[in-house]
Length: 303
Image 1 (spheres, helix red, strand yellow):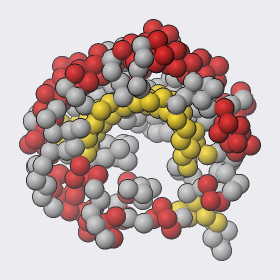
Image 2 (image 1 turned 180 degrees about the vertical axis):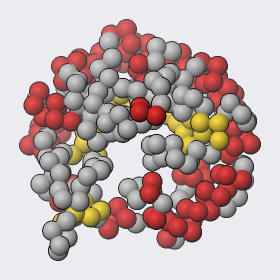
Image 3 (image 1 turned 60 degrees about the vertical axis):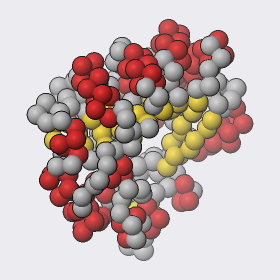
Image 4 (image 1 turned 90 degrees about the vertical axis):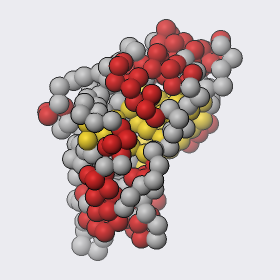
């Protein structure tokens, strides 16, 4: 189905690798890294994306698969996007969030930062954020709060917590104390699990906080609410309004294309507009409308 306008939001990938080994993350499991060399988005590539899209998009997300803060040019990239009036978002594990980095991010004009911490004891934290340090993450959160106050910034500091079996005993405590930890907002998210058919050690005991439901045959399936698709009544809006640009300049249809199976083109060979309005992109949008959740990357998506 043909699209008549450039995207209104774009995700750029500052780095395609991470220092953690989160068990349900393609990067942590090394599924993506096995076919890609670790890389940062070069500044010239970022500047080209910004130049081609700055009059069309209103939001630029600085994350996809890797840990964005590993790219030391990230604050400069954010500042460039901020200067042309874009709403900017970063998501981080906070392991590299030092005092100087926190101040650089706040001074860049960053609109919103998501800090992912999925456990508030060393045991519950280590159950998912394998290889990380809870104390380092909490210190990063405090540094952000200090920088926000120091520069009188309006930045939104969002603490994001996955609902897991390993941290469900902490949920009430988190609700009461997240502001004391330095966050301005708190968001709980259900976890996407890959090997869930026969249950999973990370699956919450309270079914309403899980994407998966136990069926009569003793196996787990995605809950009906997660199988709902906008294409049933209206098209999947994300394919018509946004996309991802990887560190190597590949343009992907959405953030669920973790392995870049449906790349629409590469900026090394074409302009963004030629890719976005091209036949490959049109054909993929059409296939989503026709096939719906028979496309693998759509099966875990609720957009």
